[in-house]
Image (cartoon, rainbow, N blue to C red; front, side):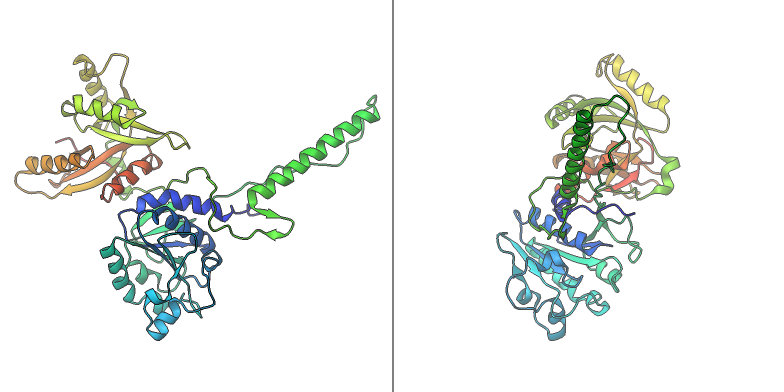
Length: 424
């Protein structure tokens, strides 16, 4: 039996969480095996971003209900009609009542989910206009739509909702992955009255049965609240829901899984601060004396709180990290009771330097430029003479979510990798 799907507000909440990660992009495809979930997610992204810039959502799924409910008026023309009759996209866009800087392009008098529309080069030109104006175009489509690969090639990237991969476009730039939030039904409760044990009075039997009925009633109410369903069937989509679900953080996958054996997994954790000021103060004091020093933003459990961890070193085994920690304690950079060896094989690559003369100077220049943008980066030399520039050090991909978002806000395009190479 399939667990009931979460109501639309959960997807909109997830979309709001992801919105900041899309700040550096101007055209994004939101796709899923469930177009209703994709539409709710796109609405959440739009609500999050419309406070900063104009956002237009295009319905390429065919009158998907959450988007259609935001369209006011009797004019049924939309994307399909724009392609059929040459009308500009701007002419078929509709303003969303009660939401500033938010527009909807409906599917049209017929479904826009056709290969001819998806593969049209008009999307590249339209996306370019949004990039020039620093606006955001969100296109909603089913993950099995014909011509999806051609559409993906014309936008900045893709947000996957409920799916981990996009077989139709395996080389797509995946910006975020949002799982389907699944709501578990309450446990079944047997309301049948049990036979009374010997010596149990009728009054006690009545009290016990009443308690069971009360619990059963509460269970039913809880199930309705969680699933958004009552006795009347599916509840209508609340497209502008303001509920605050638990944060759903997009999970990046390492771009180089084949390098996991060659990773440099061991580092020294110098400090775990609950403010960025504390971590930056430590970096300003001792960063120049620490090899591969960086600050890693790590979420604390499922909360929105953050650890700002100062890490140093990158080693293939724990012995190298232990030697570094002993040296730092001897120099009193780290107290005897402080510091620890951690396993952090993942990092976010933010730049690279091709093999060339004066590599040391080039690397220092890149790292200095990143530092001026508030990014504490470090370099690892590769076997071919090039250098990869990383930020952060993480024990698993999930830990990199906040750091990746912060780097995108800084105008960078981070790539999660198994960090490889050697200290310069």
